[in-house]
Image (cartoon, rainbow, N blue to C red; front, side):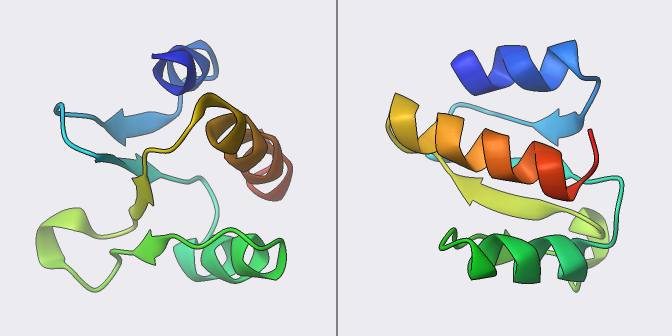
Length: 80
């Protein structure tokens, strides 16, 4: 719920349907976001090649501290 609240607060497009992951559509190029997150030690799945998920990133849901770390890096990279 913490990350969902942050995404809502910053008007980031996402899809969360009760699974162990969520999809996020960044403002910037998903390949750039993926590479930059990877350089920060955060691994996500780039879903850009999937027709119905074009432009999205799949983020596995982790602990609160992992989600806070992800969000801190993602916000900086995506210029939120």
